[in-house]
Image (tube, rainbow, N blue to C red; front, side, top):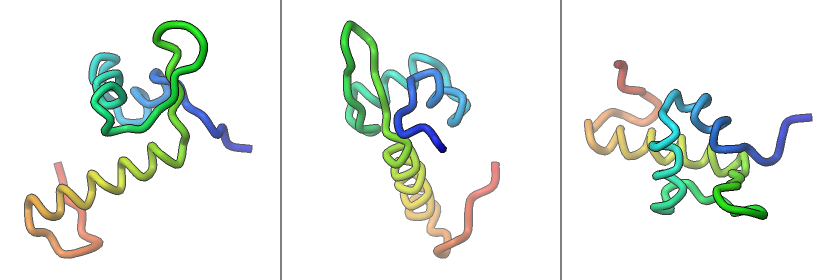
Length: 74
């Protein structure tokens, strides 16, 4: 069974980003999350991470005017 909630380190690993970048995504509302218990105990629903990734694909396509379904290569 897949985990429903991810930690910030999980998000960092999935997106290959730094701790600061992951925290910034949550703090500015780009990646919806909930705070559990004490300070800095953030949890991100796996479906929210997938939705964020899809939004980024759409934004990238729009920015570079790529046809639907085509991804920009690095």
